[in-house]
Image (tube, rainbow, N blue to C red; front, top):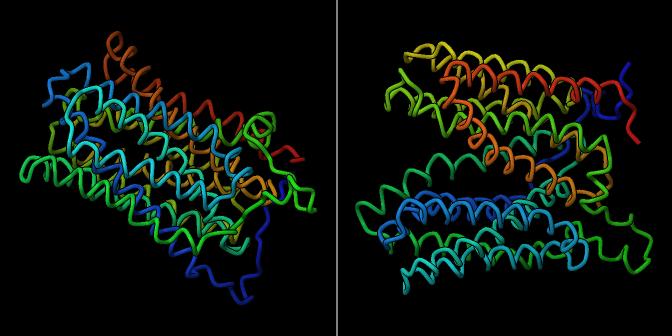
Length: 402
C-alpha cells in the first residue's frame, strides 16, 4: 500500500554497482574524524579541567550543558548559513570554532574562560555535524546512499570508542595540556581539506536565480510531515540512547565492569547495524527497516528491566544497539531521499537536532522518573516511549510524500 519513493529497491541486483568511495568523500570522512576526535577528547576532560580549576560540580555540569545547547543552536542555523555562503566556508568556520578556542585553555584555566570556550566549541561542532552530513550524501550515488550513510556511522563511531576514554586516561597520566593540544590540532588539521571540497553541493546560485532548486530552510522542513515523522521516530530512540549511556552504569544490580561491557556491546552493535541497514535498505527499501528497528530497540530497552548480570545485560544492550543503529540509517536515508540536493543541509540539521535533543532530554526525564519508580519501572517506561514512535513510523509507511 505504501507509495513512498524509497520503499522500492533503487538498483537491480545484477546491475554493476556504482563506486561509493571517492577522494572527496575520503576527505569528508577525514573531517569527521578530526571533528569527533576533538569533541570526544574534551567531552569528559573539560568537566575535569573545570573542577580542577575550582568550578565545583555545578561548574562541571555547566560546561557540558553550554557545549550541547550551543551545538543545537548552531545546528538550527546551519542550513541557512550553508545556503547563503556555501558548504566549504561553513566547514572551515566550524573547524576554526572547534579548534582555535580549545588551544586557549593552554594559557588560561579560569572558569569563565572554560565556559566561553565550551560555548564557542559547541557552535563549531553544531555547524560541522550538519555540513559533513550533507556533504556525504552529496558525494555518493543515490542507489548507494544508505550504505554511505552507514559507512559514515562507522567512521563516526571510532572517535567515540577510542577518544572518549583516551582523553580521561591521558589527562590522568600526562596532564591536561597534552589532551587540550591534541584536541585543538585534531579540529584544525582538516582545514587543509577545505579547498578540495569547495563547490560541493553549493546551492547559492539558487538565490541568484540561476535555475537550481530553491534552498529549503529548517523551518520549512519542520512543516513537512514526511520529514517530521521519521525525525520524531528517531528522537524516541535517541532519548533511550541517552538513558542507556547515563544510567546503565548507575542501575542497581549492575557492577561497573558489567556496565562497561554492556556499553561497549551497545556501541559495536549499533555501528554494525548502521552499516548493515544501509546496504539492505539500498537493495530492498529503507522504509521497511524503521518499524523493525523500533521494535528491536524497544525489546532491548525492556530487557534492561531484568538485566542484573553479564549475560542478560549483554543481550539487552546488543538488542538495543542493533535497533538503534537500524533506526539511525533508516531515518536519515529516508529523509534525504525526500528532498532535492538543496535540502540536504536542512535534513542533516533536523536529524542531528533530534539526536542531540534526545540525548539531553532522555537522561533528564529519566532521572525524575527513577527517583519515584526505581530502575526497572523507569526502563520499562523508556521502552514504551520507543513503542509510541511506531505511530508516526506506521503513518509514514502509508502516506504519500509530497
